[in-house]
Image (cartoon, rainbow, N blue to C red):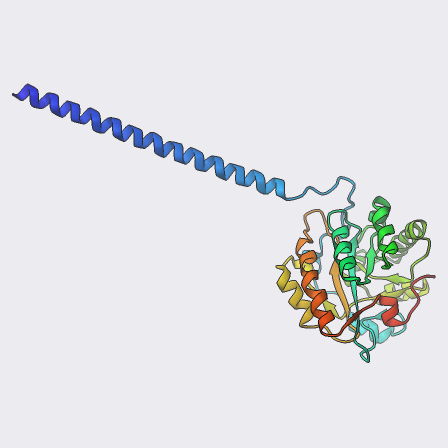
Length: 292
Protein backbone atom coordinates (compact mmCIF):
# COMPACT_ATOMS: atom_id res chain seq x y z
CA UNK A 1 0.00 0.00 0.00
CA UNK A 2 2.78 2.31 1.00
CA UNK A 3 4.63 1.55 -2.22
CA UNK A 4 1.55 2.47 -4.27
CA UNK A 5 1.20 5.78 -2.39
CA UNK A 6 4.84 6.60 -2.94
CA UNK A 7 4.54 5.79 -6.64
CA UNK A 8 1.45 8.06 -6.95
CA UNK A 9 3.24 10.89 -5.16
CA UNK A 10 6.26 10.47 -7.39
CA UNK A 11 4.06 10.58 -10.50
CA UNK A 12 2.31 13.74 -9.21
CA UNK A 13 5.65 15.40 -8.54
CA UNK A 14 6.86 14.55 -12.01
CA UNK A 15 3.67 15.96 -13.59
CA UNK A 16 3.81 19.20 -11.57
CA UNK A 17 7.52 19.57 -12.29
CA UNK A 18 6.90 19.18 -16.02
CA UNK A 19 4.17 21.83 -15.94
CA UNK A 20 6.38 24.25 -14.04
CA UNK A 21 9.14 23.64 -16.57
CA UNK A 22 6.79 24.47 -19.44
CA UNK A 23 5.67 27.67 -17.68
CA UNK A 24 9.29 28.63 -17.05
CA UNK A 25 10.23 28.08 -20.67
CA UNK A 26 7.19 30.05 -21.78
CA UNK A 27 8.12 32.92 -19.50
CA UNK A 28 11.69 32.83 -20.75
CA UNK A 29 10.42 32.91 -24.30
CA UNK A 30 8.22 35.90 -23.49
CA UNK A 31 11.16 37.75 -21.92
CA UNK A 32 13.31 36.91 -24.94
CA UNK A 33 10.63 38.14 -27.35
CA UNK A 34 10.16 41.32 -25.32
CA UNK A 35 13.90 41.88 -25.44
CA UNK A 36 13.84 41.47 -29.20
CA UNK A 37 10.99 43.98 -29.53
CA UNK A 38 12.84 46.51 -27.35
CA UNK A 39 16.02 45.94 -29.30
CA UNK A 40 14.15 46.45 -32.57
CA UNK A 41 12.51 49.61 -31.18
CA UNK A 42 15.83 51.14 -30.23
CA UNK A 43 17.35 50.12 -33.55
CA UNK A 44 14.42 51.72 -35.36
CA UNK A 45 14.71 54.83 -33.21
CA UNK A 46 18.34 55.20 -34.17
CA UNK A 47 17.57 54.65 -37.82
CA UNK A 48 14.67 57.13 -37.76
CA UNK A 49 17.00 59.92 -36.60
CA UNK A 50 18.32 61.03 -39.95
CA UNK A 51 22.07 61.12 -40.26
CA UNK A 52 23.23 64.55 -41.45
CA UNK A 53 24.92 64.60 -44.87
CA UNK A 54 28.67 64.33 -44.60
CA UNK A 55 29.16 67.64 -46.43
CA UNK A 56 26.76 69.62 -44.21
CA UNK A 57 28.92 72.28 -42.50
CA UNK A 58 28.52 72.64 -38.74
CA UNK A 59 27.46 75.87 -37.03
CA UNK A 60 30.75 77.39 -35.97
CA UNK A 61 29.41 78.86 -32.75
CA UNK A 62 27.35 75.81 -31.87
CA UNK A 63 23.66 75.00 -31.95
CA UNK A 64 21.10 77.78 -31.42
CA UNK A 65 20.11 75.95 -28.26
CA UNK A 66 21.81 76.48 -25.78
CA UNK A 67 23.80 79.34 -27.37
CA UNK A 68 20.75 81.58 -27.72
CA UNK A 69 19.89 81.45 -24.02
CA UNK A 70 23.10 83.26 -23.12
CA UNK A 71 22.77 86.93 -22.37
CA UNK A 72 23.96 89.14 -25.20
CA UNK A 73 26.14 92.15 -24.31
CA UNK A 74 23.82 94.78 -25.83
CA UNK A 75 20.11 94.45 -26.56
CA UNK A 76 19.17 94.71 -30.22
CA UNK A 77 16.56 97.26 -29.16
CA UNK A 78 19.34 99.50 -27.85
CA UNK A 79 21.42 98.90 -30.97
CA UNK A 80 18.44 99.87 -33.13
CA UNK A 81 18.04 103.10 -31.15
CA UNK A 82 21.74 103.87 -31.54
CA UNK A 83 21.91 102.97 -35.23
CA UNK A 84 18.40 103.53 -36.64
CA UNK A 85 19.62 103.68 -40.25
CA UNK A 86 21.41 100.33 -39.98
CA UNK A 87 19.57 98.08 -37.50
CA UNK A 88 15.95 97.09 -38.18
CA UNK A 89 13.67 95.24 -35.77
CA UNK A 90 10.37 95.62 -37.61
CA UNK A 91 8.55 97.46 -40.34
CA UNK A 92 5.91 100.20 -40.14
CA UNK A 93 2.80 99.39 -38.13
CA UNK A 94 0.50 101.29 -40.45
CA UNK A 95 -0.21 98.28 -42.69
CA UNK A 96 -0.94 94.61 -42.04
CA UNK A 97 2.27 93.54 -43.77
CA UNK A 98 4.64 91.07 -42.13
CA UNK A 99 7.85 89.29 -43.16
CA UNK A 100 8.76 85.71 -42.32
CA UNK A 101 12.46 84.92 -42.23
CA UNK A 102 14.53 81.75 -41.98
CA UNK A 103 18.10 81.25 -40.74
CA UNK A 104 20.90 78.67 -40.97
CA UNK A 105 20.16 77.12 -44.34
CA UNK A 106 20.43 75.87 -46.89
CA UNK A 107 19.96 72.57 -45.10
CA UNK A 108 19.11 69.60 -47.36
CA UNK A 109 17.20 67.95 -44.52
CA UNK A 110 14.67 70.76 -44.08
CA UNK A 111 15.02 73.75 -46.43
CA UNK A 112 13.24 72.25 -49.40
CA UNK A 113 10.34 71.13 -47.21
CA UNK A 114 10.02 74.72 -45.99
CA UNK A 115 10.07 75.90 -49.61
CA UNK A 116 7.33 73.40 -50.46
CA UNK A 117 5.02 74.83 -47.78
CA UNK A 118 5.76 78.42 -48.81
CA UNK A 119 5.00 77.54 -52.43
CA UNK A 120 1.75 75.87 -51.41
CA UNK A 121 0.51 79.09 -49.81
CA UNK A 122 2.28 81.43 -52.27
CA UNK A 123 4.16 83.14 -49.43
CA UNK A 124 7.46 84.97 -50.06
CA UNK A 125 10.17 84.79 -47.41
CA UNK A 126 13.66 86.06 -46.69
CA UNK A 127 16.38 83.46 -46.12
CA UNK A 128 19.57 84.33 -44.24
CA UNK A 129 21.99 81.70 -45.44
CA UNK A 130 25.42 80.51 -44.40
CA UNK A 131 28.07 80.84 -47.07
CA UNK A 132 29.60 77.43 -46.31
CA UNK A 133 26.23 75.77 -46.81
CA UNK A 134 25.35 77.84 -49.87
CA UNK A 135 28.49 76.64 -51.64
CA UNK A 136 27.69 73.05 -50.60
CA UNK A 137 24.05 73.21 -51.79
CA UNK A 138 23.82 75.97 -54.42
CA UNK A 139 20.80 74.34 -56.06
CA UNK A 140 18.69 75.02 -52.94
CA UNK A 141 19.74 78.69 -52.92
CA UNK A 142 18.93 78.90 -56.62
CA UNK A 143 15.49 77.47 -55.94
CA UNK A 144 14.90 80.06 -53.21
CA UNK A 145 15.59 82.87 -55.66
CA UNK A 146 13.65 81.24 -58.50
CA UNK A 147 10.56 81.03 -56.29
CA UNK A 148 10.63 84.71 -55.39
CA UNK A 149 12.43 84.68 -52.06
CA UNK A 150 15.17 87.09 -50.98
CA UNK A 151 18.62 86.02 -49.80
CA UNK A 152 20.54 87.57 -46.92
CA UNK A 153 24.02 87.08 -45.46
CA UNK A 154 24.30 84.98 -42.28
CA UNK A 155 28.13 84.67 -42.22
CA UNK A 156 30.14 81.79 -43.63
CA UNK A 157 30.55 79.43 -40.68
CA UNK A 158 28.01 80.89 -38.20
CA UNK A 159 30.42 81.96 -35.44
CA UNK A 160 29.39 83.76 -32.29
CA UNK A 161 30.73 87.16 -33.34
CA UNK A 162 30.57 88.53 -29.80
CA UNK A 163 32.71 85.71 -28.43
CA UNK A 164 35.13 86.15 -31.31
CA UNK A 165 35.27 89.86 -30.50
CA UNK A 166 37.26 90.54 -33.65
CA UNK A 167 36.39 92.90 -36.51
CA UNK A 168 38.67 90.94 -38.84
CA UNK A 169 36.61 87.79 -38.22
CA UNK A 170 33.41 89.66 -39.01
CA UNK A 171 34.79 91.12 -42.22
CA UNK A 172 36.18 87.77 -43.37
CA UNK A 173 32.96 85.89 -42.61
CA UNK A 174 30.72 88.46 -44.27
CA UNK A 175 32.87 89.14 -47.34
CA UNK A 176 33.42 85.46 -48.06
CA UNK A 177 29.68 84.80 -47.88
CA UNK A 178 28.93 87.84 -50.04
CA UNK A 179 31.31 86.61 -52.73
CA UNK A 180 29.89 83.08 -52.55
CA UNK A 181 26.31 84.25 -52.87
CA UNK A 182 27.16 86.59 -55.73
CA UNK A 183 28.54 83.62 -57.66
CA UNK A 184 25.30 81.69 -57.09
CA UNK A 185 22.51 84.27 -57.31
CA UNK A 186 24.17 87.03 -59.31
CA UNK A 187 23.93 89.88 -56.82
CA UNK A 188 25.61 91.09 -53.65
CA UNK A 189 23.10 91.15 -50.85
CA UNK A 190 22.79 94.18 -48.55
CA UNK A 191 20.89 92.24 -45.88
CA UNK A 192 22.72 90.78 -42.90
CA UNK A 193 21.66 88.89 -39.80
CA UNK A 194 24.15 87.99 -37.09
CA UNK A 195 24.34 84.41 -35.79
CA UNK A 196 22.19 84.22 -32.64
CA UNK A 197 21.40 87.91 -33.20
CA UNK A 198 24.50 88.80 -31.18
CA UNK A 199 26.27 92.07 -31.98
CA UNK A 200 27.80 95.09 -30.27
CA UNK A 201 28.57 98.68 -31.29
CA UNK A 202 31.81 98.16 -33.17
CA UNK A 203 30.41 95.24 -35.15
CA UNK A 204 27.36 97.29 -36.17
CA UNK A 205 29.58 100.18 -37.21
CA UNK A 206 31.74 97.86 -39.31
CA UNK A 207 28.68 96.39 -41.03
CA UNK A 208 27.39 99.89 -41.75
CA UNK A 209 30.76 100.70 -43.29
CA UNK A 210 30.29 97.60 -45.48
CA UNK A 211 26.89 99.08 -46.53
CA UNK A 212 24.79 96.35 -44.87
CA UNK A 213 21.35 96.64 -43.36
CA UNK A 214 21.18 94.54 -40.18
CA UNK A 215 17.89 92.67 -39.94
CA UNK A 216 16.84 91.50 -36.50
CA UNK A 217 13.26 90.48 -35.58
CA UNK A 218 10.29 91.46 -33.45
CA UNK A 219 8.66 88.02 -33.19
CA UNK A 220 10.71 84.97 -32.22
CA UNK A 221 9.08 81.62 -32.95
CA UNK A 222 11.57 79.97 -30.57
CA UNK A 223 11.51 77.01 -32.94
CA UNK A 224 15.14 76.33 -32.03
CA UNK A 225 13.79 74.91 -28.76
CA UNK A 226 12.11 72.18 -30.87
CA UNK A 227 8.78 72.48 -29.07
CA UNK A 228 5.68 70.81 -30.58
CA UNK A 229 4.34 72.49 -33.74
CA UNK A 230 1.34 73.99 -31.95
CA UNK A 231 3.62 75.68 -29.40
CA UNK A 232 5.80 77.15 -32.15
CA UNK A 233 2.69 78.36 -33.94
CA UNK A 234 1.32 79.98 -30.78
CA UNK A 235 4.63 81.78 -30.22
CA UNK A 236 4.08 83.47 -33.58
CA UNK A 237 0.32 83.98 -33.81
CA UNK A 238 0.00 85.24 -30.23
CA UNK A 239 2.73 87.85 -30.69
CA UNK A 240 2.39 88.95 -34.30
CA UNK A 241 1.67 92.60 -35.10
CA UNK A 242 1.58 94.83 -38.18
CA UNK A 243 5.12 95.26 -39.47
CA UNK A 244 6.41 92.14 -37.68
CA UNK A 245 9.62 90.42 -38.73
CA UNK A 246 9.26 86.76 -37.72
CA UNK A 247 12.30 84.62 -36.93
CA UNK A 248 12.29 80.92 -37.85
CA UNK A 249 14.89 78.36 -38.94
CA UNK A 250 15.09 76.18 -42.03
CA UNK A 251 18.40 74.69 -40.89
CA UNK A 252 20.30 73.68 -37.80
CA UNK A 253 23.35 71.98 -36.44
CA UNK A 254 23.88 68.25 -36.94
CA UNK A 255 21.70 67.20 -34.02
CA UNK A 256 19.00 69.85 -34.55
CA UNK A 257 15.61 68.92 -35.95
CA UNK A 258 13.38 71.40 -37.80
CA UNK A 259 10.53 68.97 -38.47
CA UNK A 260 8.28 70.78 -35.99
CA UNK A 261 9.09 74.10 -37.64
CA UNK A 262 7.85 72.77 -40.96
CA UNK A 263 4.66 71.42 -39.42
CA UNK A 264 4.03 74.70 -37.56
CA UNK A 265 4.04 76.65 -40.84
CA UNK A 266 0.83 74.89 -41.86
CA UNK A 267 -0.85 76.49 -38.86
CA UNK A 268 0.96 79.84 -38.81
CA UNK A 269 0.45 80.83 -42.44
CA UNK A 270 -3.29 80.13 -42.86
CA UNK A 271 -4.04 81.62 -39.43
CA UNK A 272 -2.28 84.88 -40.22
CA UNK A 273 -3.77 85.05 -43.72
CA UNK A 274 -7.24 84.67 -42.20
CA UNK A 275 -6.41 87.54 -39.82
CA UNK A 276 -5.74 89.77 -42.81
CA UNK A 277 -1.96 89.83 -42.77
CA UNK A 278 0.00 90.01 -46.02
CA UNK A 279 3.35 88.22 -46.22
CA UNK A 280 6.09 90.22 -47.95
CA UNK A 281 9.88 90.04 -48.12
CA UNK A 282 12.01 92.03 -45.68
CA UNK A 283 13.14 94.66 -48.23
CA UNK A 284 9.54 95.22 -49.29
CA UNK A 285 8.41 95.53 -45.67
CA UNK A 286 11.18 98.00 -44.80
CA UNK A 287 11.31 99.70 -48.20
CA UNK A 288 15.08 99.20 -48.45
CA UNK A 289 17.27 97.77 -51.23
CA UNK A 290 18.36 94.15 -50.93
CA UNK A 291 21.35 94.24 -53.27
CA UNK A 292 24.41 96.44 -53.63
